[in-house]
Image 1 (tube, rainbow, N blue to C red):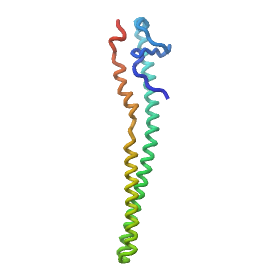
Image 2: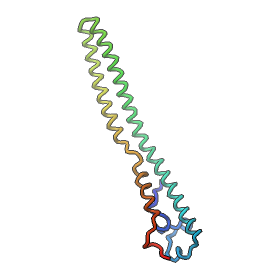
Image 3: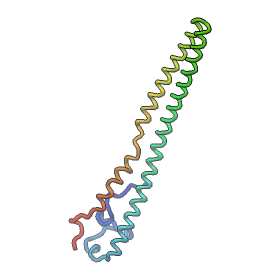
Image 4: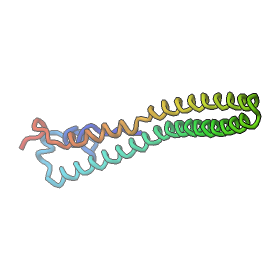
Length: 155
C-alpha cells in the first residue's frame, strides 16, 4: 500500500513525469500549462492514495465492528434468556409455591450476569473502533500542501 505525499508537486520537489525533483530553473523555464499539468498529476496521485488509505482503514475498522456486533448479539441473546427464565420462574413460583420457581429464578440471575459481562465486553470493543484516523489526518493536511510557499519559487 502506498502512503500519501506530504505536499504538492512543486512544494515537495517531485516531478511526476520525470520522477525527479524540480529545480528553480526548471520551474522558471516552465510554461503555465506545464506547471498546471504537473500540479494536476500530483493532485490526482494524492487523491488516489487517499482513497487507497481510506479503503485499508475501512477494512481494518470493519473487523473490529464485526466483533463488537457479535458480542452485542451475545448480550441480546443473554437478555432474551433472562426474560425467558424470569417468565418461567414467575410462572413456576406462582403455581408451585416456592421450590421449582426459586430454582428457575437462580438460573435467570445467572443469565443476567452472563448478559452483563457480554454487554461490557461488547462496549469495550466498540470503543476501540477509531474510525478513519490516518485518512482524516492526511486529508486535513491537503489544504496546507496547496498553499504557496514564498521561499520556493520566485519570479
